[in-house]
Image (cartoon, rainbow, N blue to C red; front, top):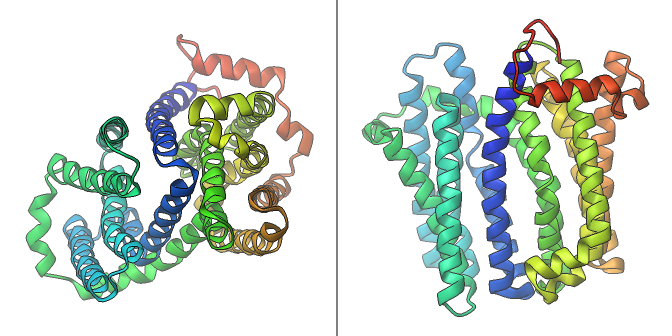
Length: 426
């Protein structure tokens, strides 16, 4: 079991680390290329597109694993037919909206949304069919889009449109590579033969997961959107850099989360969850301490003097990131046990707290107020999930948080190259 955990974790971590590395390069280049004000405008467009993409896809793609497991006839043909017709319909709607409004911001949001919807759908469906191939495409996309962005940075003058062009390129690239790598063009013709009964089932099944995912995204992105409305773009750009830097810590918890989704599908895996929590708390606290001591130097080195003022907001956000570790690592267990409604209710409360506190605190404290709102809502979310987890399995709080000598020995075995006793639990 140790070997299985190690191999799964290393595969997930390698992919996440590669994507996060290229993501950090993009964050640095965009910040230095655009400056804080244009960076803030770009952040508003990107986050708005992300939210629209979640809502409009209707959660259809998330039904694929369920129907595939249930043995739905011709499920792959049916799901791709729905996905491709969605793209056509949303693209036509985006074209009409663009022609009617003529507003540049609306045009960018409208035309990017169908591309992001299709990219997300193909990414998820191919993840179910082939994790390794999907991970290869994700890493390749990160590398190529980072390279294109660097070329714009080196050879063009400051212009937000160039960065948006890279975003278009990124979505089109991953769509094109996925279609040809998995030979999905065979399913194009099937889009003309829609099964409306199947579409109805997809929407009915996928609507609730879509709402849950929307709440999760809003909990991460509502602060940037509200901040964009209430303060100057300069401060939004500063804040967004702090957010993206802090979110890199979730690289580790997300890697563990993917392993836990697999493990909790078979068993509760309480010991594995506890060990994962302890490891990620140590990583999170170490990162927070590092930023507290060297944060200004890090911001100056990576992003330039213009972004040093993001220091205080960045520290606050790092504190909130630690709170969300509990949610990320316990959520897979609750989903596998059919506690979607409870998770939905907790996440809904977190979003309400986040939005409410942003509205109250931003006028008083500016971007630091937005960071504080995120810290409180993230901590509330993680705290509630941890409390429910401890209560259900009758676990003591401190022993569930503090690493023990036995934990250290297990971690050593996970990473040491030797033969394992497959009966040993982690």
